[in-house]
Amino acid sequence: MHLINPELPLKTVIDTSVWVAACFHSRSQQILELWHAEKIIVCCTPPVLAEYRIVLHKIPPIRHKAQKILQRLEEGKATLFFSNPPQVDVKIEDPEDLKFIACAVGAEASFLVSLDDHLLKIQSYDKVEILKPVEFLQRIR
Image (cartoon, rainbow, N blue to C red; front, side, top):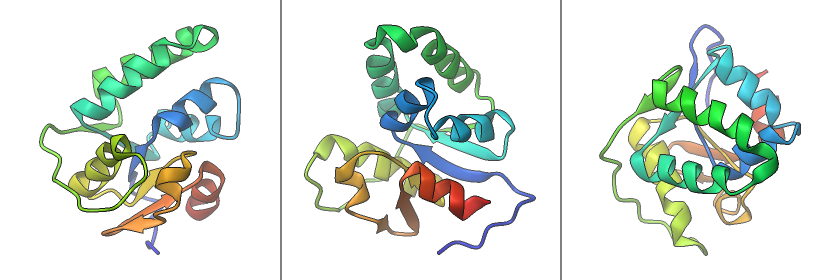
């Protein structure tokens, strides 16, 4: 469990499922608001950003909101972007999800926030806690 300093933004990796949910006015939208308020720093790598682009553009009802998220990420506002995520050795049902764990480890993020059961089953890896949005919001408030 991480000690949280309210003075510093938390380095956090956001799984694509959370961005999608945030665009549909779910509880995940509070995470988007925290990012806009620069209470969290979203950590990102090229493979993570590529998945965001592909998935968020596929869902017509959220394209406008998704474009705003992608633009903010690409502008680097409250975003830590790096190119060389480490290799991670963890067994996971969907190997495509490894990019999120690698991003979190490489960025030394405190949290990986997801709605994906494959990631949530792991619970933590290295020093990264893997939480549902509601759990993340409870932990940081």
